[in-house]
Length: 259
Image 1 (tube, one colour):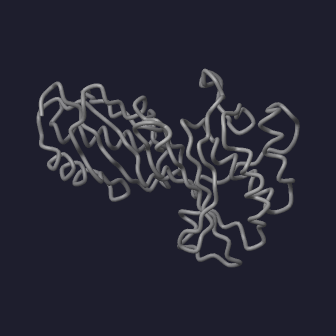
Image 2: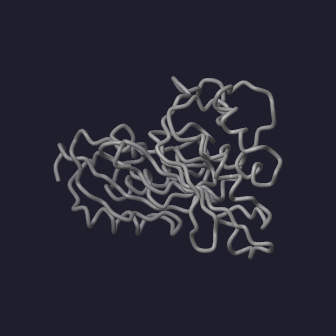
């Protein structure tokens, strides 16, 4: 491995105790932990930093089953040694699933054609506290049919301003995104909302899920999703699901149609 080679990392993490992916001063973040581990692995001097770029900036409390990141190594270490070395330096809540050489022009974020997020809902009447770290206990009274009806409006290219929040100075260039698929699936006795899109706005999935759960509880009609997409500035209640149920499930590379 030489200076013309980039390293790709495939990662999984429990985001419960982290202030999100992105490094922040005086905050414990996933990116910060990985960059610190990279610095130790390559014996960098204090103050030196090798940036580790992630495919997506997951928020505080959000998990990842597959996050992809890249960095440019200062010296050559075989991929197997990178994986083993980083895992020895990282907390158990962050794991490097794979490390591999990548082309110099590979970019974890900009080379991605899309991402899939999954949101886990616990629909039991009484939920074990051991489960709620990774899912939202919503009770057993949801109408899945109504939620699926509401979710039908999401596929396609839309203005998602009604489903995101960003602080001043962090507004995206455009709130328009293409959603490839949006569906509910059963997984491990949970109801899981799965959405694949070319990209996501801040809190977009959590606000969509919060709206769909409100529909499932009868607080909103299924048509509300389509109304919010047609008129993002329309008045009405806004909902946001807790972070614990959300997972970055997959990052897709290649043609969007193959996501």
